[in-house]
Length: 123
Image (tube, rainbow, N blue to C red; front, side, top):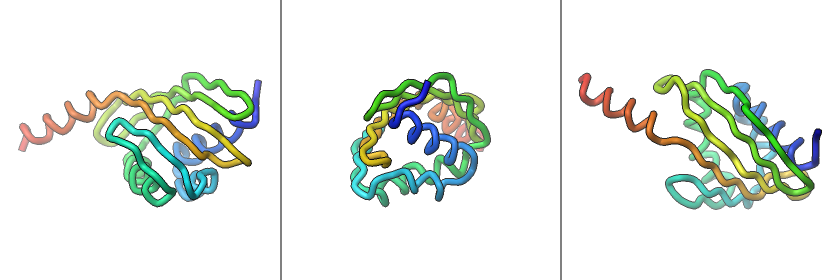
């Protein structure tokens, strides 16, 4: 079952998890507001600065579930990255006129913290 917001959220998700971050950014509004575990970001360039580096270390993704209606969508997924084998995350997306205007990202930071600690103690 699809909806307008879910269609946009899935297209965005497929693009950035498929290695085409520039295409993913075409679904993002210039004035996007993004809530992240480390704080609020405003504007497409701030969002690019946050998401771009993560997309570069991504090696795989498994979409676990996705739901949506006219204006909102919720995606839950698990990612594989260079430093972390399993990093679950979720995104609550608001879509207006075909673009993502608001995004709330929730992810488990513990695997990344553990990888950083292991890298420091191993050096």
